[in-house]
Length: 366
Image (tube, rainbow, N blue to C red; front, side, top):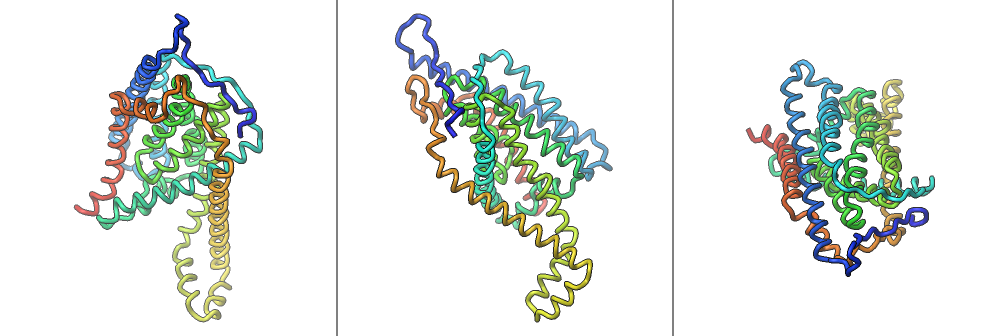
């Protein structure tokens, strides 16, 4: 993936012509990280407040309407939070990344690798979430807010919000606005900030791991191409898969759960009983839906496995440019995240995590 995607390392200029001041460079990087942290903290806080105000003002009769719940994402995050963040960061110095082309097959390859990251991240996230809620007799998988909203949603609002708006605005927020302002401190700093902040902002472990992985992958692509529309396309490919195919199939399966359970029950009995049941037209239709859903999930599984294999095959292609001044990645990471501004952002994100799981656990123990 290196061809047509190479970016020269940006090194801080020294106007006096003296040897570069490594300590000064580290201090400058930390200062930028502090600014990024508190500005994104303000952005997140504004989104949280706007969501709570929206929930208070929303008439109770609309609580179960999917369009009303999707607007709780659209209005606070994209209509209020995004413009506010643009105002907050617009004065920060930014670097114009040299534009590079990314061929069609490289886009396809990146999508497949992304599916591998999604697959592994979802498994890890599901396990961690279940370990948190299981002691309280709650299944995190059965109480996944976004999954439940997707399954109960109107197709238009689902595709418009998750498939179109989310990829556009999230790539602008966590790739374009962020990376342009920190890439001068090296690819490692830019990719770590972009990926981890993106994952943390999702506010739950079910999404944190795959969101962080995808965020880092998309950050790498943007850092090497300077074209945010590439990452928007990649993000849309991931989200549209869920919005357009997986969710509708899951909805169809759930609509006929009674018939599917009956088929499962009869499969343990003599075959003639099952065959007689399957001869019914309505049962045949449901059986067909179930088979399509099963094949689709198997296809996604194969894509994920292929993506994991391809990631390791092309691992050397993801080698990052050396950090300016020869600063070690460990130092870059610590200075980027262990500072007042970024700690504020992390604390705000932890509030989202705690709130997410308490909303599942408290009803079960009260």
